[in-house]
Image (cartoon, rainbow, N blue to C red; front, side, top):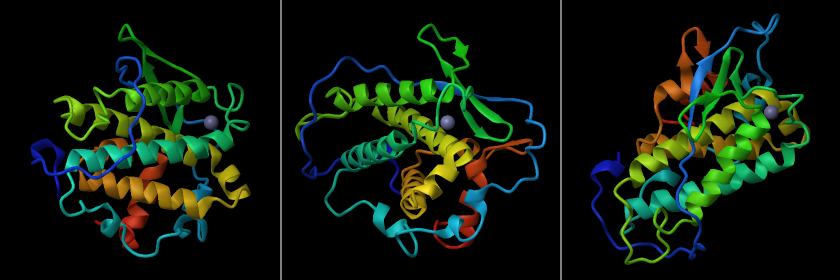
Length: 245
Ligand SMILES: [Zn+2]
């Protein structure tokens, strides 16, 4: 594993410069438990059913596409990949916004009994409707990726010492957006016939997160009584050899 937290620096790969932006405003949020909705348990979610669960564009193990290329700085590699995950996920969510509304998704769910709270600027956890929560995630990430103090655009500019913790936080929030889409909007993904693309993006995201130690298992799986929906997908992909065990 190439850990970010004891990274040695090397030459940087080329990347396109990002515009300057306002100061960082790291996204925040905590998970909470809620009561299961009546009749919700026992229904196997579609994203866990064949053939949808295993539809993917990339065949085989994702490990090969996440390993650090030779002579590439690990921070730079992580920054570029996070930017791509954010951009792709934002595009997927963009086509789902009509079905993710204050009415359809009054809470930011990630499983039958899991919903997430946003942490306001004064540190208080608040319940937001899913579209409001996801907008808050995406707009704070937009600010971060545009901020050269966080994502340096020049190759001689060092990464801020807080970069590893900032990106772990970004990763947790992106995971929640994935969890919500799988839990609440997989039908629309199927309707768009986008499940191979979406599964591949998510499997890539999980493989990358594991390789660079950006994900906590608890965030992927939840706890025994309040499992995060995508935790079962993660287990399934590990069993299938798509992801490393
Ligand atoms: Zn929704």
